[in-house]
Length: 47
Ligand SMILES: [Zn+2]
Picture 1 (cartoon, helix red, strand yellow):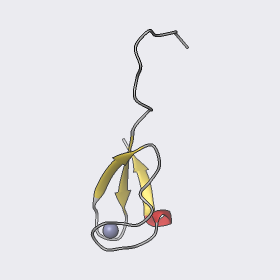
Picture 2: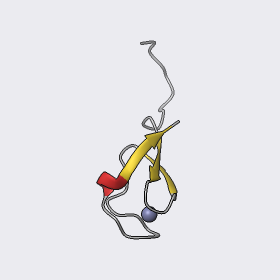
Picture 3: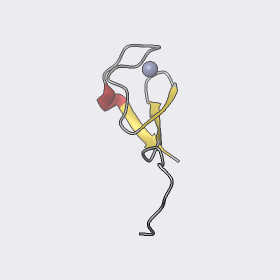
Picture 4: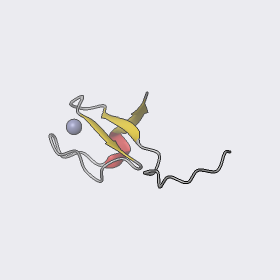
């Protein structure tokens, strides 16, 4: 862990909906998929 003077945005991850394949970026998966509407537990973390 190195200290930084810059205010970095929180570690952003990429999430993919396993139902429709939509990808979203964020610290946490979206509450619901904006495309097909499934809940966040249908999202998986991708690189
Ligand atoms: Zn979806």
